[in-house]
Image 1 (cartoon, rainbow, N blue to C red):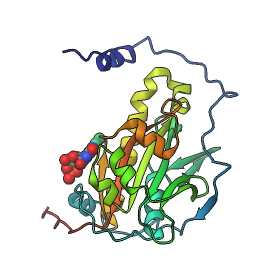
Image 2 (image 1 turned 30 degrees about the horizontal axis):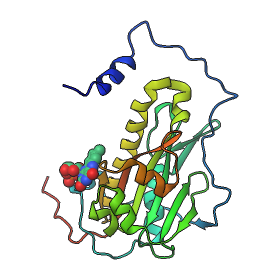
Image 3 (image 1 turned 135 degrees about the vertical axis):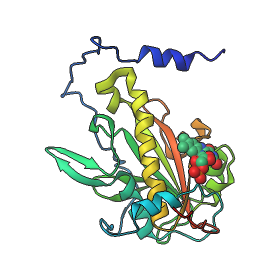
Length: 251
Ligand SMILES: Cc1cc2nc3c(=O)[nH]c(=O)nc-3n(C[C@H](O)[C@H](O)[C@H](O)COP(=O)(O)O)c2cc1C
């Protein structure tokens, strides 16, 4: 076996009983929890979200499947709003901290959400960033990026055909601040939780989704405008109106 770097990382970031590294938490230099783009050319308000009701969870889990064929119909802004809230929306407060829909190691919330909008009613196609505490979107770049994002996702056509492409990055220092190099384990776990919320929320709303881990990292980083070091893409999820709904299996 040639590829040792993964095993080396696992070994060097293990916790051993009695030898857990003690890192004093530097509250003065704590990285910012929220990212903003002060030069964003536009800010978009999102419709209010549903926080009760909906289909039963067991049916949703039973019905969820990855969907790679989309009709080309747009999402509504209300649907996008609900999906954003379901993945990273603020759902509670604990002292000075906002707590979000998906769990996060140490409640440090390293992940940022960018949306490549291919077709969403009320939004120009382009790249947007989710302003978590405001539940609003910042427009970063206008333009039809469907072909570019499809190419960046290892030429997977579904990313070009989907109505919206969620790109989750991590601001590495937010979690490194507490956990050192062990943070990379948590960054990917955090992103996995967010992706699971997206896929279940999409199913709950009668939409199709598929997670994407196969991507050209530098190309996706360039689309959302991050450097790939301090902030880097972890995971992508695509959403759209499914070509045909799979009939849920009987439970
Ligand atoms: C981390 C991760 C990465 C994935 N990457 C891709 C991908 O790049 N392309 C793709 O078509 N499906 C991708 N998938 C979807 C899986 O292929 C799919 O979940 C699996 O085949 C099981 O099918 P189901 O989701 O319908 O249950 C990914 C899923 C996960 C969890």
